[in-house]
Picture (cartoon, helix red, strand yellow):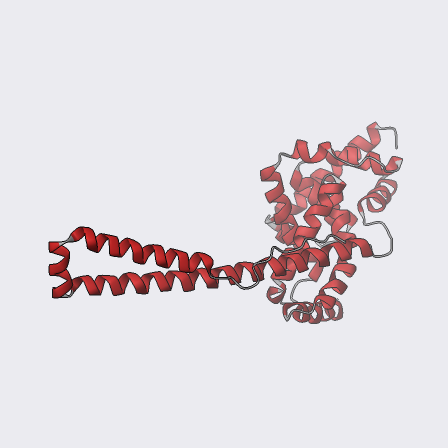
Length: 170
Length: 114
């Protein structure tokens, strides 16, 4: 994990010095999980816009990445703030209207479940159960106390389990 | 049931395996180039503006000092219309000077999305 941070830190420092190729390497490495997370949070098209905005802000703030947290955690926190700004500009209902529904049955099923969760429940479940984030990392991102985050994940999971059972999956 | 459900969550919530999206990387790079160009334009405009503000302030201060001179003060008291005309002419000259001065790199940025 430290080696990965070191590599990302070196790339970020080079990006801060104006090396766009180094930043392109960071984008290439981190775009997949970031866009997947944002797509699970709302419409895919808007997710890509938010991801682009987040990368642009990460480029401008490249010198501020200190390598203590994972680069993906730092980047996702930027994207999360971008998403919150987007939510303030456009209500969630509008963001979800354009959602790309071209996905398989399981994808559609999980999207339907996530749609019925709150913003924090959705984000914490996707990060902890889908992306392998620790509770501590997710709590920091969402600005929640660790205990609250754990109960949010638990509540989100039990809601989804109930919906999954009701859909005849047990 | 729990195992199946956990598998389902991990399978559907995690990022799908795929190659890096080079088109997306190119889009981000193009956006960064555009952003850098706009920032350079903004810096340039600010420097031109600050030079102009300093110039106008210097001229205003010079006029103020001139008007405080006893000879000019007495002339202003005798014929304020002429003094006003002179000030207006000086102001028009300054406006003309700044409005015709070419600003470096004034071409609009070209937008290219890869």
